[in-house]
Each structure stands twice: as C-alpha cells, then as structure tokens.
Length: 94
Image 1 (cartoon, rainbow, N blue to C red):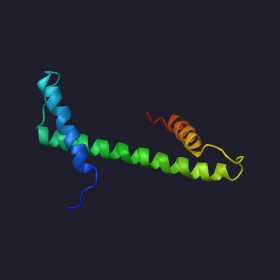
Image 2: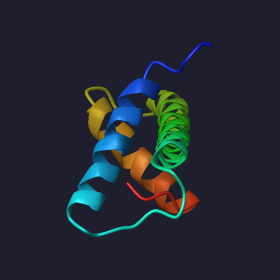
Image 3: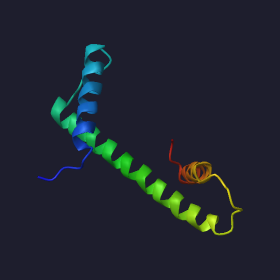
Image 4: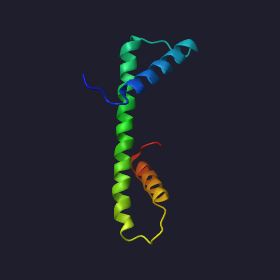
C-alpha cells in the first residue's frame, strides 16, 4: 500500500493529540483510538491538500502579476499577500 509522504507523520501527530486528550482527561472516545487516529490523519492530509492548492493558485496569480509589475518587486511578499487574499475569499483559515 502506497502512503502519502506525510501520512505517517500526521498519524504520529494524531496519536500524540489523542494521548494528550486522554491523559489530561479532556476527552473520552466512543470509537476506538485506531479509527479515530486514522480519521484525524485523513483530515490533516485533506487540509494539507487545500493549502497546497492555495499555494499553487497564488503562484499562478503571481506569475500573471509579475508581467506588469515594476522591476525589483519582492516576490515573497507578493505571493504571501495573494495567498492571504485567496484564503480569505475562499474561507480558508490560515
């Protein structure tokens, strides 16, 4: 079974989150921890994909804007501004 490069990392993060919630008495689980860990991992992977897509969109828009931008413009600041604007328009919390 092929796994996403970050899937194992996100799975470990999910396990640590669940352990912390359980140890601190902040949660009881109606389902087993393994399915819950898998679900959290899927959510984290999905959110990463949303952010990756947002970055792709920002870079496309940046390339379009750079054609008419004055020389010496700070590309990093521009892409961050575009990314922030796109996130707000699409209701994506950053």
